[in-house]
Image (cartoon, rainbow over all chains, first blue to last red; front, side):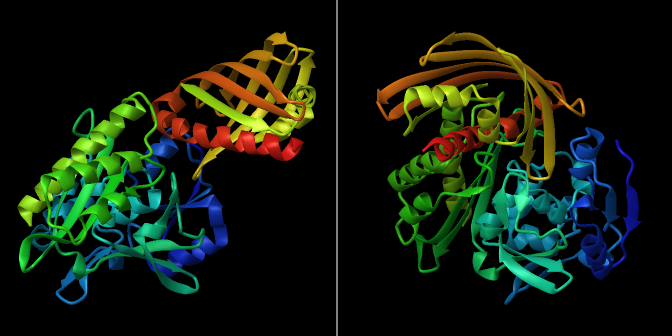
Length: 287
Length: 147
């Protein structure tokens, strides 16, 4: 590992100032579960490391019936997993967290770090996308809110500017439905080979009618991918087995997997098909 | 991993052939190529940079032409090492030229690439995904340069 200069930032402003000063030569250190691994392997060698773990203002989970859920960027995965309000109101988040790496990783890793890292195999990203989440990015000129749909640009690339940090995740209350996250991996603690998050909102007057749905696939493209064609097939329709199968089929077509050591492109499309089908059925059963 | 691409260039086959054997031109068409240096008539050294998000790798590559059939085929082998010792790769490539008309040539290539080292364990899934993009960028650059 190369040498670097270490700055423990105590406030968001201080972190922003340091980022403005050192730009792309600097990296933010949260829980360190992605960055430190890359640094140890020499894939990343920042000259300046800005440790933001001490900014206690960014570690919170707040829920309001009107506003929805707000999560501070430095909240750990384990906090999400064990939060009573998340288990009750956004159960898919807690269920997804139980599949993310191991408990020690979840104790250290932060939700903001996970999103800013923008690994296509992230478990958190597809799940939050299925919930229609948005993120607050704070820089020297203030804060801006970006839909998670627009946040992921490419593999390991986001809409974050070099002098900005992700400070908050907001899940609107309108996303309160029933969802399920399926992860297919070689071992339980591995990254997903394929993952699928589905959030389903049923019509309150007709429990078979799909009012809204989001189908998001992970690990099968440079960023998490929504199957808008699959969503459009089900939106406003009575859910039937045939429609679910059709939505799963078009989702598999929309995926952009590549052949690698974990399987061929065709194999991964088949897994997408199976997981989307199962996730919609599971979400419908929980709705 | 196998990278395959096929595309048509609005250029006579002889011009395309000469261009791909010109270090300056081929160097400007390979995405991330920082330098090409001929060693002899059949071997080239080059430095190629690849960037995925915040991860940048730089390879020192030696490419040797093993077989040439005029205006039809170029077959190369090569190997390269990452300059910070993150990994090592070997490649075997076949480039086929097919004159469709006097002014149009179809170019197809198949590259078999094997990677070892840290890049193979960590970066395999990322590199494979990026290889497609790089192939497309190469095709676009060749067309831009010759059309």
